[in-house]
Length: 173
Image 1: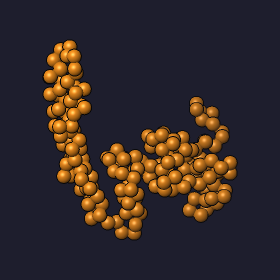
Image 2: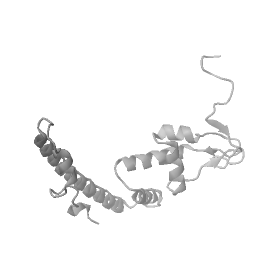
Image 3: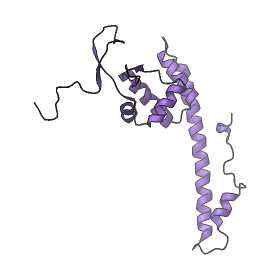
Image 4: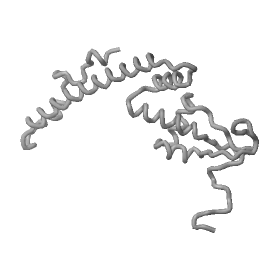
């Protein structure tokens, strides 16, 4: 027997007896536990459960013991959701993107408009962060050696008279 091999069935391959893949009983199918799915997609295990609860992840099959049993399609969906979140899309927008991707005819126009809205949101955040950077740089310079009795950085963070956090046109609803 080769190093690392086993006579037993690997833990990520199950014999489909009650639910079959493509309707054929007895076909071996690769499945993932919730922990493996989470690791493979780079998310927390509780995140998977949350996405199932709110309905953006489809319900997995269950083993005879009641454990979740995920198919490769679940991993693809979870990676799509994670990447969309990384790009700043909200849950409802992701839900709509999933819906559009599953439709008989994808609406590229609608997806384009959603992407444009996201770009506008990103631009507004960049503008706010640039303004915040300038204010903090000014406060650090005002702080000098750091021996001031009243810290200019804390004073600046406490005031809102220089436009930090003011909504921009792009960030307004």
